[in-house]
Picture 1 (cartoon, rainbow, N blue to C red):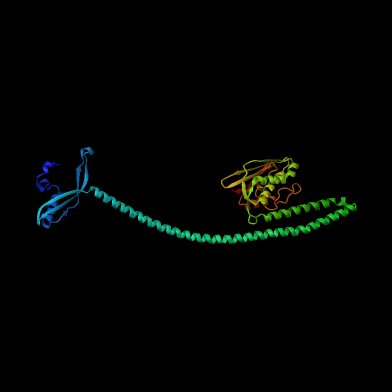
Picture 2 (cartoon, helix red, strand yellow):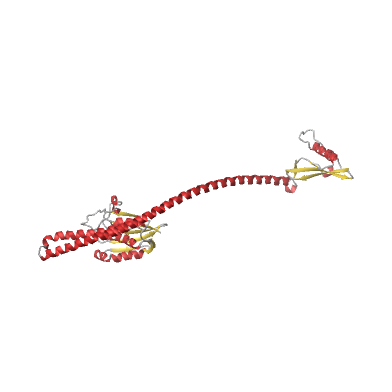
Length: 376
């Protein structure tokens, strides 16, 4: 490293001589060629970029760092004559760093542009697929609407048929009952009634069963959420109304009724929800060999309200859990327990029509718990 004093006043090539020992050290030769060009053409000449290590100041550590230099030879001309040549060396390290960063940024932008093009193509393909799926979905929805309207029409026809059939059957049935009453009265007047009392008892019992069966069949056919619109129903008030209707049976059996839980308002057909509770509570009162104890409760989940009617009755074996919800399925003799075998089938149809489910837990001899869910 030379000092400033050692360089001042000396010719350039003496201050910076060539180094014959290093074939790569051609700086002096390039400088001589550049000066000759400027002298001959009287034009500025910019030499190739040079890289030299320089020592940093002691306060910055004094280490050697690579710097990039751009040498220029500038002619000074007066009256057409070359007076001298200015040799200027500019540190362009920071400019090169900026240029390198700019290239990197341009490269990154190019990569981002390619990715955006790929994403646009994918989005375009996805939109096309979505359009196709929407068209298919529209077709399916149209078909479902047509089927829904057809089902609604069919349900309405079924309800009308059930009402008409029930009325047409009950009318002659009442006539039969009236004539049986007349025959019984005449036999009583003639003193012959004791001989036929057993027959008349069976006839009246059969008449009651047929009448109950017609009513249950009508209820079963009428259960459809398409026929009757849903309403906001206070479930606690609905249960209380059912208990009021069953008051005489509750008193006769000395039944104990317990109600617990936070009772919500639900979307339901009021009459059908009442029938659902009544059938389940009535079963607890009927299928019981002792004093009935019935607890009615409700719990909330994220999507449903789950109601429970639990009794201490005769119970049901697990092999019959599915069967009892079918039409006309009785597990006990009609002589022991009255009924048509439609009560639980009606319950299942009501719950299904409201978008819920019904199931049970039971232990023979200990009781049964019926659960049903309704959407929140």
